[in-house]
Each structure stands twice: as structure tokens, then as C-alpha cells.
Length: 330
Image (cartoon, rainbow, N blue to C red; front, side):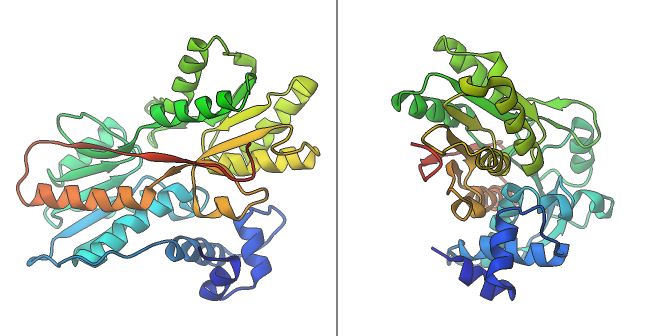
């Protein structure tokens, strides 16, 4: 496994800078370029390249991200998916052009063989993609299963896996900290399967307590804010275990608990989702549901090439998850 020293050497910065960036230190002042180099180095050092035969032809595809480049640095889940796409394309000799959300106007009909759309796009945006090419694969979103290919995570099963783990460890008072998202054109709220499943499964177990569910945005800052709110509202009755819908949120949760001198995991166990590259560098190291994001990107490329080569029947691929127990949970 890569160390902080390895990341520092690859990014060309000091070890202390890497440590503070990976822990989302709000007092650190570095440029976006430096931050990008560090996160990219962390992702690249975890990537194991696969060697496969190059195709005879060279398709040209677009990788469209629903985030801007700056926003991507605040949610490494999508950064890792993008690396999976780009590395697979490089290995296969596929020409890929990337577009962030604020660059989508550059997409042109007739110039592309296919599109990989990473993130959650509204029906209107999907129609725009279809006007450019019929060959489209969505990653982390599955619109119109009969019409489009997609690569998604079974967050329902992942959520039940976390709750079952907590129950096996004797926890009954289990809280949830999550986020909500809108389509970028503000046309609708996107349902979060993790939140929905948490409510349904905890209700099924007769353990649901709506007062221990907190919903904000997917950011370190909101994770910290919601955890502080929970500390103020529950005091000694604070849940003994908290399921956090993303590692980015969980980093803020850990920070708030440590600031309040709450022992982790002795008093509160925390499990996040995604296993982003920084999860093993924060303190305490973060227990999390590993989502194989790079593999999601690789799979999307393979699906798109199948489409380009003539497959007409749509596919939805579910990528398995894995519970990784580290220092933040018992």
C-alpha cells in the first residue's frame, strides 16, 4: 500500500502538506493545482494497470462528468471513477475526451462514437446526449433501464451490510448522517438509496429513530456540522454507532467527535461509504464500505465498446461492495 511519503514524492510536495490535504485540514492554504496533484497521486498509486490486447480500430468517446473539476476535488468518489475510465481507455487504445459539467457545451454530434456519463443527469440532459450519439453508458446512475447501459452500486445491500454489522456488535441505537442532491438543472431531488434503505431496514428491525437521522450536503463541512448538531441534541443519549453515507461526510463526522473528545470507536463507532483513497490516511483510519470505483469506470468502457460494436440490448451492471473494518468502528 502506498504511504504518505510515496504520495508526497509523486506530487512533489512535503509530507506534512499531503497529510493536511488528505485530512481536509480547513486551516491549510494551498492552490487547487497542488490539491489536485495530491489527490491524483493518491488515486494513481492505488491503481493496478491491466494489460489487454488493443483493438484494431480506435473509437473516440467522451467522458462527461456531472461535476466541475473543482467540485470533483471535494468528492473523490467521482475522481476515482474517472481514473478508471481514463486508464482503461489508455490500455485499450481508445481516444477519450473529458468534459466537466461546465464544459458540456463543447459536445458535438457526429464527432463521437459514444459517451460515458459519470454522475446523475436529468431527463433533459439525457435527451441532449441522445441527440449526439445512441451509444451512452451511465455510471452511478441508471435511467430507463430498457434504453441505456449503466454501471451502479447496490447501495441497498451495502446499507443492510453495515446495519447488520452494527447489530452483530451489539449496537441498537444507530444513527445516520447523509446528503441529498439535485440534478444540476434543479429539475428534481435525487433519491438516495442509502437513506431510504436505512429508514426501511431500521423500521423492519423496530429500531428506527427519526431524531438520529441528519441530512445535509455531501461535504466534509456538512458532516462536521451535522455531527455537532447531533452532539448538542442527544448528549449522553448519542447513538453508539453512526452510518455515514459517504467517506467525505465521515471525515467531518470524525473531526467533530474528536473535537468533542468523544472516544472512537469505544463510545461511537463510525462507518462510511466508498473507501476513497484518503480513508486509510485520516485519524482514526476510517471503516467503510469499499466501492470499487475504478472498476466501475473500467466496466463502463467495456460496455460502451460493446455498444459501439453493435450490441443493441441494454445492460445494467451492479458492482459488488466490501465492508472494510478499520479503527473507527468495533
